[in-house]
Length: 344
Ligand code: ACO
Image (cartoon, rainbow, N blue to C red):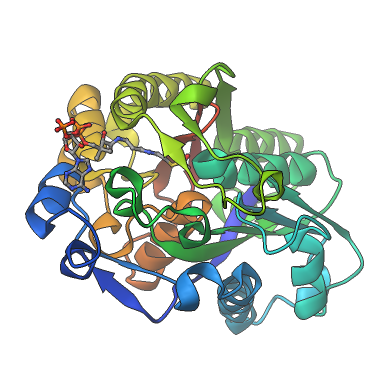
């Protein structure tokens, strides 16, 4: 069965924090943040992270479910797998996915979280695709979201200015109608054409981790030291250099797997960590920057939320056309990196 994204949703906190707001709290400036990262503002949960990820995940998932239901051919009862990618869950357990399942009154199907920081959404999408392709389920709800503000050190200008809070959701479904609409027919020849089409429409994934990058990007589990809250540590330059080298490499790998070229990609939906990283990847792939949509200027780095939030914005703005071939790529702690090619 060939999985396809049939609906998207996203949710951001109400509160906008501008670069000028931050420069009143710490030794930084709008000019520094804008020119080094492209970020102008970000959304921060109320009470600096106490607003729960569950609240954002429910809003994002409900928006995706409503979009799928508007199509008339979908009911939430069909959801056969619930995945949440996050590194800032509200609780150590139960998993966010189980609590989301309860909040949305979903069937009693498999529900679990995946933790791979900024690459988390890609890992969850890969897992959901594998479930659908193997016939384990037909429809999956995949949420990526983080409330990074709860683990930031607001005195550390090196990291605090980079992140925002938010969640995005997609519904991935085995879509035989999509393939039938492109081919159709019952003869042996037509069936073989169907199979070829199914293969061409199959999403492809490449996911890696070098596993040795802990020193470049880490945050200890919160329970390690209650008296001294843990916060994120990052060697920004190292992560920057890693991203600029590895993202084009893994995109090349997944394009080869999909049997396609960078020229055939309608849009490259990259993890939103730094606009300069996006520019550098576009340059290395020799593709125009217009092919690389971005919302980092408004959202900052929303970690596992970044790709599904951007996908939802593009979808709702009518910028994704059926049949478009998209390339997604994420990178982050691990150091981990990955890419996907999928047909809209
Ligand atoms: N305001 C003003 N000055 C600052 C700020 C700030 N907010 N932050 C750092 N500086 C200073 C530094 O202290 C340094 O000063 P110094 O030269 O006196 O020591 C100077 O600015 C230059 O610092 P650089 O590291 O050279 O700045 P750079 O151009 O590399 O940009 C940045 C830094 C934006 C962090 C960049 O390296 C980057 O984006 N890296 C990738 C980050 C990333 O993708 N992280 C993913 C994490 S997501 C996850 O998986 C959880």
